[in-house]
Length: 313
Ligand SMILES: C[S@@+](CC[C@H](N)C(=O)[O-])C[C@H]1O[C@@H](n2cnc3c(N)ncnc32)[C@H](O)[C@@H]1O
Image (cartoon, rainbow, N blue to C red; front, side, top):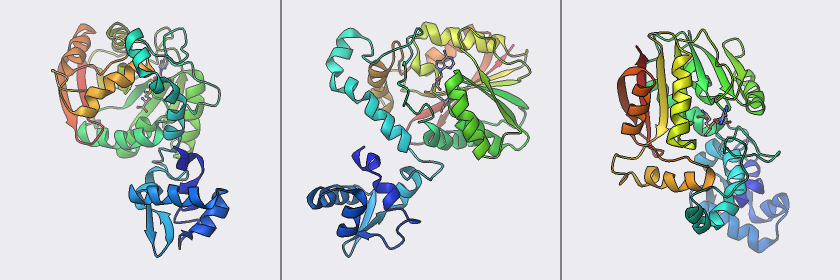
């Protein structure tokens, strides 16, 4: 977090410093004393974020792709936003006792983001996840989909790149879709992806879509609220319409994989009722919303995501 905040991965990127920087140069650019510069850069090198050769440091390919500000896949804002949640993790026992997040929340029990919160912090992560979703699930027959709680629009961007005929509507809270519009323009997809500011619990959802993608949204909510969302989404689709859910899902016994199981703890820290819901829960809620033929596809990768597809009868 400190290295990201201090701009290490911008200063040591391939474009800015092709030959890397020695400690004296890095010290001057980062504005740190000598001992902390060495300690920080050596630690980044030892963990694979930097490369160190003949006393010169430069970004590793991983840092260029995932931490430098200029990369489309950058997790920079994700790391900075985690700082906002940090105070809640410090009081994890309190959150566990209270069965409730300790961060400020809005009327829906959702995070009341501070003004400097990035809102599009998942962009780099979700772009990569969207690319995997595009390979795991066939969107060849879809024409226009709504991306419910679509955040920065990353999943829409990835799917529209993979399927050149597809159009998307990113549905999210007004300040979030304002950020999404910037990402959509930057991706050159303004003619195929539009935005729809809405409260997904109350506002009308867009018509004219044959598919709805609900990616990484339902885990933020209790089973009751997640069912409400799926019910509203299914109702907005025509018969034959398809819902695709992308989620972090542990196995039925919640024994593995560890990252997906532990995600339930993160949801206590970060949300009012969110959880690492299981496939059988999602299946039940989809069927309850009038959707049938549930197909479950595991998406390989460290974030242990699963896609569930179902069709409106
Ligand atoms: C974890 S993010 C996932 C974003 C995106 N689908 C992705 O995969 O990157 C959950 C999204 O749900 C949106 N959301 C939460 N409550 C909402 C509400 N009541 N109305 C509209 N969007 C909401 C948030 O603003 C956020 O963008």
